[in-house]
Image (cartoon, each protein chain N blue to C red):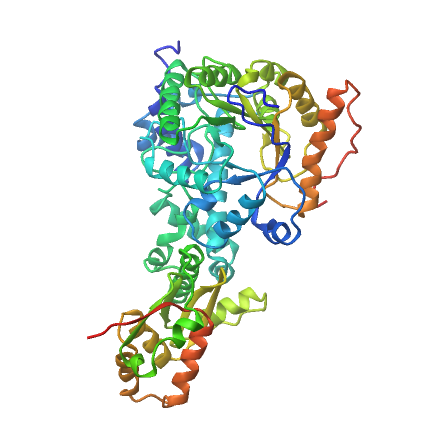
Length: 283
Length: 293
């Protein structure tokens, strides 16, 4: 039997986890209030045995060091362009701060970065904070598209089956892997530079609109004009094709939206597999 | 022929399914005995990985291997996780499901590391109870792997091999014997790896793992980033002598080379097994430089 002097399993686990998550030195972590609530600092060296080559604290440090590296690896896999923009050191600093506030609570590391965009918006000392926030929003959106449920895109026969005079009242339902995004910076353009491993210029403020979606299991994104974005937004909000088009056409755009432009958009969106169903509701 | 009490088959020599090999596998249909799949990578996605896994599972036997069961944790069992694991196992007709003897987090958090257990009576009772509950929910026995560890608790009363053997007997679960992990932990803690294997009950072992590691001088890290070293191959040969034909899997998770290199490394295990079965000297292996050198 373990003697009474040894801490219980739950105490050992809470203590060790506290040390792993604490970002100070091992000594600082052991002396922290939270760690001492489990095991007094004076007893810490006796909890973990030293090896022939490493002290107790050095052995604990192996786990502590690996923790941050693992978190960084997971976040850089979801936010490669953000890492590219910030550089390795600044990105690692950001990771340390992020996981302190939002440590993983999921069985999968795929969810670790879910709150990164909103976290970045709170970091006043982050270089180019607004740009970083919006770039992270785009990358998070693409991650969601990657994991979204698969829905078969609308087949041409289903489109052809809708009588021409019924389109006005038809509704188009986007596929599950579909997301519309609006930005104050050309972050999609920045991501393009990173994807193609081209040097990325610093990009100034500029309104941009993007549709992200999946086609044949590949994540894709397309830049949109504002009227195209608004038309797609209206369709995604379950407006009829007629109402969505009227909503766009009654506004004055520069350059103006022409009728053939509308046809081109719909043709491209159908070809890209953005919709899963067309529904014609009778009155 | 199966040596374990559940009749789980000796699937032969497999490798871990990794995304860098997806295209190669789908395009070339390589001849390989089986794949092991990291469960968590497919439980929460409806995208390409799951689509590819479905195709792989149609062509090859698949085994699920998890890293988040946290069987030794004092947190409540995560039944939402188990529900998804069970569904995935059914979807891909998993031959069996495995995870690690470890804990990954408490107080609702997950460090995503395979953290070491103190091998105490209390920990044993606690883990037996949890394994039983997990198996009841999954409606199948699970196999637990000995993880590589980098520290030992003074509270431990049991050697790890005896703890895992007692756990398997009492909870009626299987063992996934990771031969590389036996070696890594024996180096880090100074025990005899052959004695460790001697303590493992033969009829509980459903699978073996092999992998490369990183020797830091003062300790070894289980990085799965290189070829298997000769000492580990020798230990594998010893394990085969003790345990008989057991499904064997080669893990390679960092600096992953092409499919054929990984598969070639897995097939070395066949050579060792055949030589051992014929009582011949072990094949001489060339000293292989660290991958990427």
